Amino acid sequence: MIFDIEVGFPDHLSVVIVGPGPAGIGVARVLRDLAIPDVWVFERGQIGQSFRNWPKETRLLTHSFPRNVFGVADLNAVSFDSSPGWSLRSEHPSGEAYAQYLEQAAELFGVNVQCGLDVFAIEPIENGFTLQTSRGTVTADYVIWACGLFGAPIDAGLPGGRLGRHYGAVNSWDDVEEDEVYVIGGYESGIDAAIGLSQKGKDVNVLSRGAPWLDRDKDPSRSLSPYTQQRLDTFRKCFSINLLSDVDVIALEQEGSRVHTLGGDGRSWLSDGPPILATGFLGGTKLVSQWFDHDQDGIPLLTAQDESTAVPGLFLVEPEVSHQGHLFCFIYKFRQRFAVVARAIAARIGADTSVLEMYYENNMFLDDLACCDDDKCLR
Ligand SMILES: Cc1cc2nc3c(=O)[nH]c(=O)nc-3n(C[C@H](O)[C@H](O)[C@H](O)COP(=O)(O)OP(=O)(O)OC[C@H]3O[C@@H](n4cnc5c(N)ncnc54)[C@H](O)[C@@H]3O)c2cc1C
Image 1 (cartoon, rainbow, N blue to C red):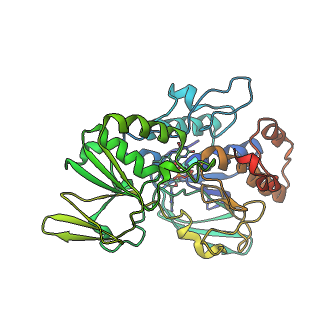
Image 2 (tube, protein in one colour):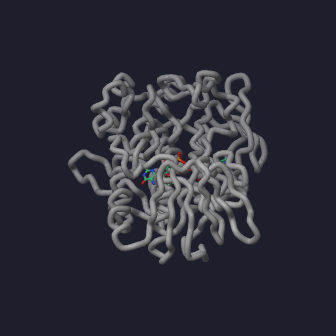
């Protein structure tokens, strides 16, 4: 594996994976097991950059626990034979610590990662792709898009959204100076912000459209994770967290040195500093969206191999993958598709895929999408 080299990869590669987060590193490892040559992962920052950008107090929600011989992989592991819980000695690692795990995993797996290389655009050509990058043009037979979501905060089109401060732009809750803070959005990042701020002694008001803290959906992609729910229940007893549901924030307005947050029902709130926008992240496929068909909700349409239905050879491995209405937006979900994508590429190259048996044996290979029809498999 080579980091930060100036010159190193050939002009033409077999597979380019864009983004060495858990998705990119995990799928690169499977391609390595299949002995696919000339596979490179490109990263504009450092390995695990999204995790390095989290507020420093934020922890993974899904817990990490070593599996040993018992067959259930650590929920945050990108391979069946690694465990952030074990290597980091932490059940809920911070973003920075998890990025270290990814870096160690990349090194141990022997995958090629080129850091400091921004991919600006990709273009399908005959038998492959051209990638325009900050270090020139590269061609590849296959592209795996693994850019995640965190890099693209959205203010949900809120008029005056620039008066707020997006969750993704906060380095630490220590940086928030005001004593009373408004958080817009009451899902995972909103509640994480509320907990982080309340621990710093702030009075926190969460303004939320619904009441996710009361939602009992069994899929943590649709309701608060047990970790967040547990922390919220604990911290609400000791700290000042005011949860307001049924608030549809329609605009932010400047009022002198203060910010006015306007609700659709006529209510409004004045704050000394910018409200925290916990309004989510734009899909990481924005840069390549023209190469995907989309459903009516804007979700990229994929084949059963997670390949673009519009452009063969372009695969998607990341939280935006969705099949039959089921979201693969946690590591323990989308890692089930690494071997599916790797098998599709291996089959076209003519590589032996028998090694993938071990992915089945280790429960890291969900290729039977009919299973997604069965509600039981998501509980
Ligand atoms: C606060 C928070 C807590 C979370 N907690 C959990 C949790 O507990 N468990 C869980 O399973 N998930 C959790 N998630 C979701 C998890 O972070 C994502 O599912 C995961 O990061 C997605 O992995 P990925 O590899 O697809 O993308 P990322 O980890 O975002 O990696 C994508 C990489 O691509 C790089 N990149 C992007 N665009 C380009 C480009 N054009 N050129 C070059 N490089 C590029 C980025 O710099 C980044 O390093 C959480 C998310 C947040 C925001």
